[in-house]
Image 1 (cartoon, one colour):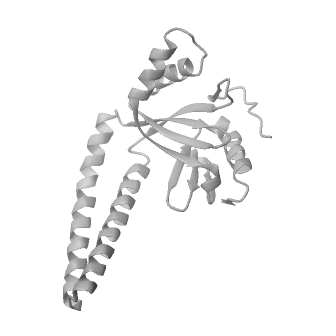
Image 2 (cartoon, helix red, strand yellow; image 1 turned 135 degrees about the vertical axis):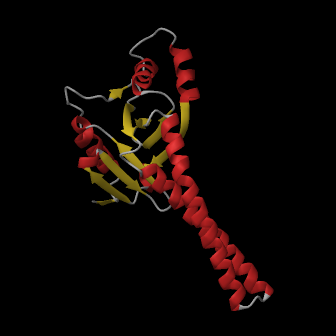
Amino acid sequence: MTQKETANSSIIQDTSGKYRWVYELPMLKSFFLLLEVWKVLGISAMAVYMLMFIINLIEGYDLETLRASVKMMLLVLAILIIISIPAYWIVTKANNGKYTVLFEMDDSGIDHIQIKSEKAKALEILTTFVGLKTKNRTTTAAGLLSASGGSLYSHFENIKTIKPKLNDHLIILKGSFFSNHVYVSDEDFDFVYQYIVEHCPDAKKG
């Protein structure tokens, strides 16, 4: 079994065996959030088009009408993509240029939780939450939940591909319908990667 032996580790393990760590990502140096938005927009547009295509076929519309529908869909998609660029900049400014995320990992899977606060505050919340401090523990746990900006949980049994990118401090977990980005510092990268690999024996590596 993989052991966490790094002296400079930023990962905290609680009494239940769950591992937690905080990672702070400069949003203007990594555009994965914007790319994820574009991916969702593209999938949504395709789903809408397929529905329209089926309806048009049923109602007997000609080929020219179908082509017009495609042009309209592409135009709307292009407008949404263009609008998303300044929107991403606004979100970046609102978050002080940084994306702070809390990761929780155990034998079942890993949770990617956005924290709407600076890293120092997130780390303070984290250490209190896992029991390294005892004062106001319940209040702090509630504060952590209220500070959450959304999460993405990956069950290890559903992961199809594990792609490590050491230079980017990133491990990409791909399932059938999702992609989760796990960020981890250099000193903990090998531990987290090996832990995930051991719990996803059927997943493709690399």
